[in-house]
Amino acid sequence: MAAKLKRGDRVIVLSGNDKGRQGVISSIDRKTGRAIVEGVNVRVRHRKPDQGNPGGRVAVTAPIQLSNLAYIDPKTGEATRVGFRFEDGRKVRFAKKSGEAIDG
Image 1 (cartoon, rainbow, N blue to C red):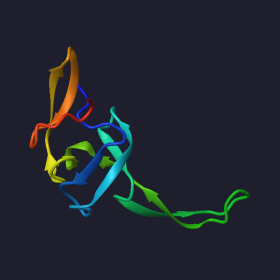
Image 2 (cartoon, rainbow, N blue to C red; image 1 turned 45 degrees about the vertical axis):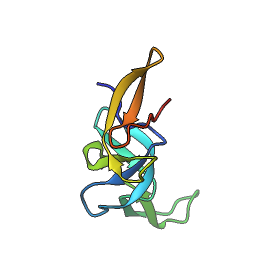
Image 3 (tube, helix red, strand yellow; image 1 turned 180 degrees about the horizontal axis):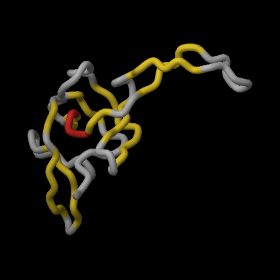
Image 4 (cartoon, rainbow, N blue to C red; image 1 turned 180 degrees about the vertical axis):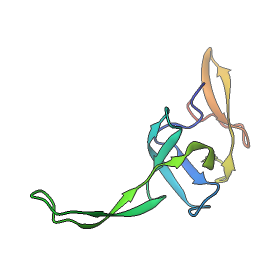
């Protein structure tokens, strides 16, 4: 299946504790269908100290399900679905709300 969301896309969270928050996708795991979005779904982990770090409470960004994310339309600034079309003989993604090309 084609990738509707990619690394570097600006997205908004549609459901969950972080609903309405925006961020940029830093990585995607296609196998599990999850993405890490900067500043969203931050959890606190307790780390034991070792030679390299002092330990304590460390903030870690946890992955979020791709189905809970929506692309932010560059023209309107609202959540939109992503579609595909051919322009000049190549396949590009476009925002369905405004019709604006994302990749091209």
